[in-house]
Length: 342
Image: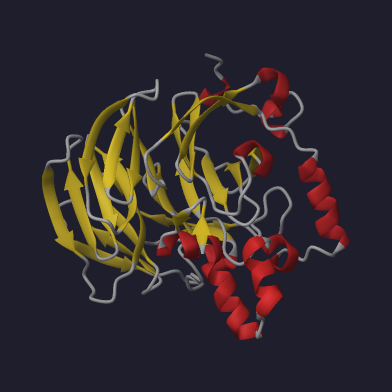
């Protein structure tokens, strides 16, 4: 399967459609029906012929995003991961890490291994997650630390890092592996419901000392203490506001400075905002505002800017007072830094 003339990586393919292929195998779907599932998952995986679906699709077609794209730039290859470090946008491509200024100019670049899965920043360091390995480097690419996965069968997906350690989701073992900052193993964290991971959609982040991760096959986000104790979960299957659609969503999770959670979905891509207790706030960017496609878009906050990546493009979105007046975001009473107009 190719995308814009380039071979899609195995991880990207599975993020977009790997679970569709698995589902097709179980259902005995072949030929034209399988192609429809890959090229238009909404037609078969989102119950597209029901009145509820059609109504929700109509509402989304009329949706107005509270954000507008103010700036963007192209990077040399497909983007694997996104982070922000101080005043720089850190972009990972299959063989390189690029650090850009807010003006889109390249300020630093260094080579990495080709099997990068995710990236995180903490205490001025860049943590690189590979399928069975973690590497830590400085912004110039100097290797500071490294360790191999605690299991030979590891298939790491996403990571988050803060004072309590390095938390890695494992798509093979279907758990979270916690390491101390020195790379020693702390514990494995299992979901009391069981993590269901049909594809590489196993996102994780941290907020106020808690861990939040997706349980994608259950269409939920789960919260844990730093020591791995289950706290709560939220989310349900569906395509309406505050619901997660398809076979496995959300794909990615990040946070805002005021303690909100942002989720990114695939299939019908969109970025939504939730309170930390799971209360739905608003859809921030819908499929149209993002630019379409079926893959989940990566996103990070930087001050009042929402940085979003898709394929090989970085886009910067900012809050728009006129647009937001028509949305739930505009009526939200949270003192959100995103509402500051630059």
